[in-house]
Figure (cartoon, rainbow, N blue to C red):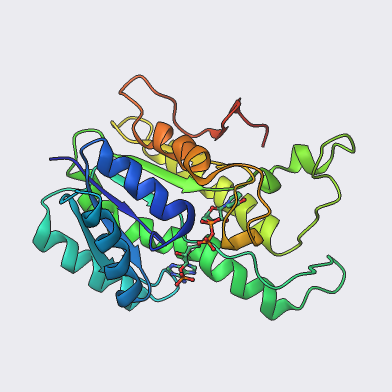
Length: 240
Ligand SMILES: NC(=O)c1ccc[n+]([C@@H]2O[C@H](COP(=O)([O-])OP(=O)(O)OC[C@H]3O[C@@H](n4cnc5c(N)ncnc54)[C@H](OP(=O)(O)O)[C@@H]3O)[C@@H](O)[C@H]2O)c1
């Protein structure tokens, strides 16, 4: 059975992504920094009739937690087919460029950038054992410098100077990793779920969670002819 690991999957888009992958027949590991919340999440899926789900404690900002999660995972599966770096925070707002506290910037980068990078690095050997490994880095259209330079873009005034750069950096890392893996069967992409109603935005997002998660699932399950090193949203390729 193919397997998938989703970070920050105890709730929100991550949970729904895990649910949709479970429905597709993957064995899904729900990453949760709070073990109890992870157990609660898998119980919800088990109550819906799915048995192909488990949870593993993982805090993406803690290298020891990531290494323990990898050790726990390799006892349960020989290979990992999909890694979805979904865990993310917005950070306290406002984040004006001229005075966003450096500590706030570092905190957001710890989760959204360094967290995804170190999780990817620690899980890489298990991914390499899969026939067609896929990595999705969950990003945002707020990461697009092209969008941020376009005064007609609907989110043009939404300048969060910690959150957006952390996701722009994640996009850049995705391009670097995809290049490194270009002669292998890996597909590595960044995917924007779109403005989705979750705790992240006090449910002000326009999209239902099923719709946001389905974009991630689409690019996590690309076939061998699929793209790599790209930035995708529901509408298709997004400008960097
Ligand atoms: N919602 C949107 O409109 C939107 C738009 C574009 C991109 N995104 C991106 O989509 C992803 C999911 O967001 P969401 O809307 O589902 O937000 P959410 O409901 O707030 O869920 C975020 C998840 O990340 C987890 N998390 C945070 N810090 C973590 C850490 N250090 N280690 C492990 N897990 C951690 C949270 O765990 P706890 O429950 O323990 O806090 C939670 O499970 C994020 O990367 C976000 O940037 C969201």
